Amino acid sequence: MNLNNTIKTQLNHRSIRHFKNQPLDKETLNTLYEVANHTASSQFLQQFSIIHVTDKEKRTKLAEICNQPPVSENGELFIFLIDLHRNIKLRQEANLDDGRLHTMDLYLQGLSDATLAVQNMYLAAESLSLGGVILGSIRNDIRAVSELFNLPDMVIPALGLQIGIPDEEIQQKPRLPLSFKVFENEYQDNLSAQDYEDYDKEVEHYYLSRTSNPRKENFTQQIIGKNSNLNRKVTKRDEVLELTHSKGMLWN
Image (cartoon, rainbow, N blue to C red):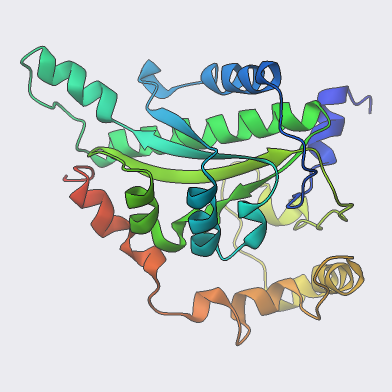
């Protein structure tokens, strides 16, 4: 199989959390913004926005929310937003009602727009030999993030993204076999716990041998073990629906 540079970059993906103290130049930043801006958009509604976080105090606060100290350190930090605010203002200024903007369908379109834009920018950064990490951890306290960035109604955070010049060497985390994820024509529900044994050994070897934060754990333990995040009944992450409603989204 002949692999072009794009595919090689994608297959070489790994999350980088530590970056050199070297900000990206404006030309590189604008290139990344343009890549995000040209992401496919459902019904051409373009329902996402980006905040480039350069304020040190905000970064420190966000690092506390994410429980990840490197968020406050080097690298460029971006917050990707589900943004229905622009479109609702256009309708209001035209003396129209809000139409379907409060529906789950439009919310999901905004979430798709934001998520695809994150991935596009991330891939572009990796193609420039930069590193990065997607920060789902901003959802640890989505209300605090919304207040931190003074987000108006119809705007909520989707994901964070940190990008920069890598300052660490990271091993690649093994993924589930394709046979667990890729099906022909219909969903296949024939896996049992025993089918995960080889993969669990591979994941355990990865965690034990990696240079950063080694530990003894496998994939199954992450899902059902005593320290699994899935065991916790309620966290601040579960407040996302309440906040989304308060911001004017998902009313019906």
